[in-house]
Amino acid sequence: PEAVRHDPVARQQWAVSTLKLAARASQNLNLTAHATFSGSLAWPFFYPWPPHNPLLVEEAFNELASRWLPILNSFDEAGVDLCFELHPGEDLHDGVTFGRFLELTGHHPRCHILYDPSHMLLQHMDYLGFIDRWHSRIRAFHVKDAEFRPSADSGVYGGYQPWIDRPGRFRSPGDGQIDFKGIFSKLARYDYPGWATLEWECCLKNGETGAREGAKFIAEHIIHVSEQNFENYAPGSHERGAVRAMLGLRPE
Image 1 (cartoon, rainbow, N blue to C red):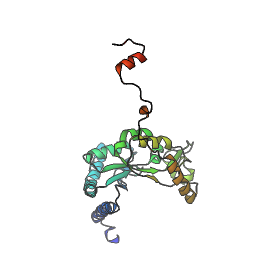
Image 2: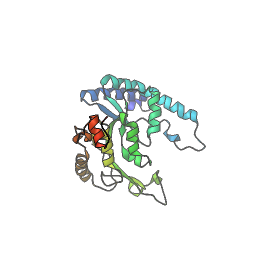
Image 3: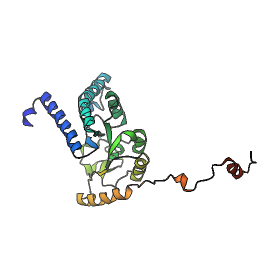
Image 4: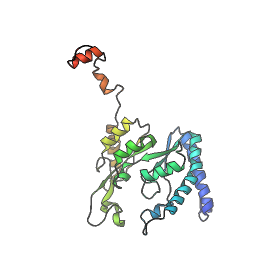
């Protein structure tokens, strides 16, 4: 609002109150997860020279946790998980930064992750291993594809070029390099409880086409988990004598 634009304290108070209202709105809509970004106190120093000041980063994360704790408590009262999209440009942009923040919040029960593999691929992260590491904290999921094609002129940061000219760029699901079969398999294995949400950002394809194809893409990748363990389809004998006979051993 215009009344708080030039008053940092009032602006922050307005932002906090707005997020608390969002917790109530999510509760009223019977939602269990709410997506957000962390904010960017430390991000301007993510690649500093001279080398970064450890105290600066420590102070930034302490302040970040202090600002978010009242909001996390409001989401806890509403029974809604607050899911930080790990996104370059935000202080929480990978597993290390999320883990640092999580520890400073006392491992708050409502502090969770919005998993978007596109931002991890462009950071050259192991986005499948990330699920193994953080599956208990993943409560939201963006189905968004990406690709990185090495260039002789620019790299991860893109050289301020339009997205279509960057080595790393977002694509419609199925048009990029992300292993979505692997992702859906991991999420099924760990009984992911949330939605698979199409987030469409493609530098080439028409948006309506991306939406139509993306909905079909998600439907075809969702795994309907078996109610029976694979090993139980052909159960063998658990009687010791029968097992010894299978091994060609004498009865005991």
